[in-house]
Image (cartoon, rainbow, N blue to C red; front, side, top):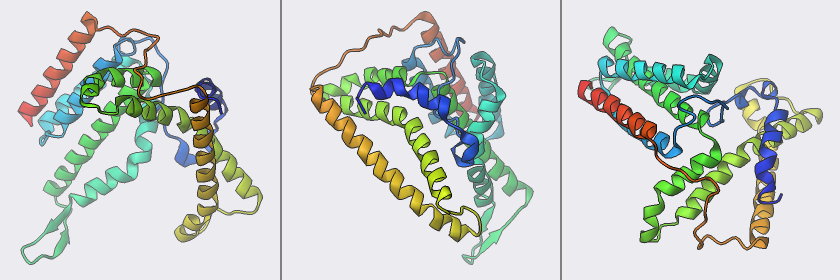
Amino acid sequence: MPFFGCFFYQNHIYSRLNYTEMPFLDITLGQYYSGSSFIHRLDPRTKLMASILLMTCLLFAESFKALSVYLCFTFLLKIVSGLPNHVLLKSLKPFGWLLGFTMLFHSINFSAENTIFIGFDFNALLKGSLYAIRLVILIVLAMFLTSTTEPVELTDGLGLLLAPLRRLRAPVDDLVLMSALTLRFVPILLEEAINIKNAQISRGLSLEGKLLNRIQALVPMIIPLLFQAFRRAEALALAMEARAYSSLRVRSSFKRMRFRFADYGSFMICAGVGCLGVYLG
């Protein structure tokens, strides 16, 4: 597939995907949701730095007072961004098992005799709930970043933030290119997974039964998918080589990014929320 052709092919793939055929592909985390809200118009570098700052401060939240601050701010972000409720729910749905495991894991107590006791007392449930809510906020913050920022702008902003590392001979351009290709090829691989799944079912593959049988049935699907991924990677490498692509050259961007007053104000608000959460935590 041509190097630039795969970028324009993305929207065509999104329109053809049918996630109801494969429930585990019903994931909205990492997908851009078109809009014209205040958060959509912010500079991608502002959203990147604010998200990293809030996520870092959230890791120090050890009380429900601190979590309440982040929850209120997350609810405010939801209102300002204009994202529908089903986008948030679909982003959290694949992580339901992880939230349940988090609550169960923090309910395990170790006694002095090195024996394990699973306690479901009030304090253990509160502790498990605190970590589960913190994980929910982390996922939602990551969803806000990817849902309100186009993949191209996100990778360009990442490249500008990491630009000073070029003086240390860090492979910044290679990192940005890998991030862009990863975001672009996700919908293509999803469509290929659906096609391979339908083809294997037509040949008599059964995805029902016991858990071990389901895991064994995934092998005839994973091997062709990996083969197709390597084929596309080889075709992309040949296309880039034919166009004389070189990671040693500093590449320019069609869109110029500039910080505005709204970007400085938004980042200061996020920094204030993070500091308040750390203080209460």
